[in-house]
Image (cartoon, helix red, strand yellow):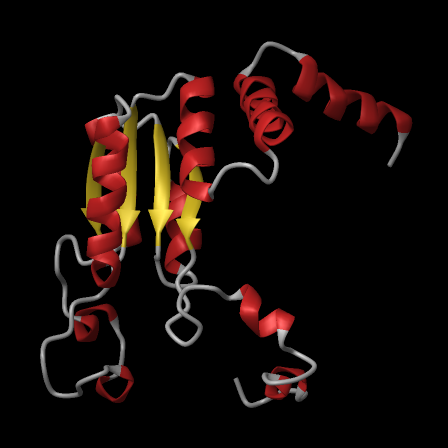
Length: 186
């Protein structure tokens, strides 16, 4: 990195803008609570430090119970949560160009996830921080791309490993050795 580029980058972290404010809040949460708080508690601490009261929840319908619990936690801690489910605006996958053989139940209605509408709904509501709860790979990226509010993740979806994708890495040289096979046809 060139010296001038480095100086410009440091300026973004030290100036008074949003990037500096968010970076300081994140560093403060890490510095004060490293290894002491759960991810749920860290999200609350971060939201408080950036002054976010309205918390948008971009959630998968398969994790609705977890979303309800997190919503109760947010309310009990003085936040105002609002959830947008992944199937918002329910459009059949076939209408979006997905072939029938890629549906979980070919020949029937299967609602497509709609991360663009989730982002828009939470933006229109006035979310000051959005939290992803189990959106599919790719849908999480689209949601983040289209959200006007800052986005963090509470739960990463992994249907095989109980929403703990790191387990594949922890066991990549033992129980989950298939992950090391080159080009598994994925």
